[in-house]
Structure formats: structure tokens, C-alpha cells
Image (cartoon, rainbow, N blue to C red):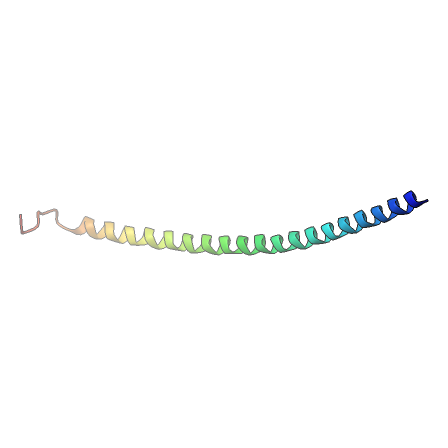
Length: 79
């Protein structure tokens, strides 16, 4: 009987450890999920900013090129 009570106590201890581990892991997974969601939102925000910047850069590049096309192709006066 002493073996049975020791085995039962050992099983109770192991079960408690497993429950604590599962609880800890669930909390960690939840925290990591929040981090992933926040990072995804930040990535989407940065992608929108990059797209807007690329559009602005493209418009600026077009304006510069159109002005360059209108300039006479002469050597500068210091040559």
C-alpha cells in the first residue's frame, strides 16, 4: 500500500506540473499572438507608407524628367 500511495502522490505531482506547464504555455502563446498581431499591423502600416512614398517619388521623377526634356542641351557657360 505504501507503494500505491507513493505512486498516487507522484502522479498527482506530475499532473500538477503538467497543468502548470500547459497554463504557462497557453499564456505564452496568447502573448506571442498579440505580438504577431501588432507586428502585422505595423507591417501593413509601413507598407502603406512605402507605397505612398513610391508614388510620390514616381511623380517627382516624372516632373524632373519633364523639366529636363524642356531644357536646352547646351554646355554650361564655364566650359
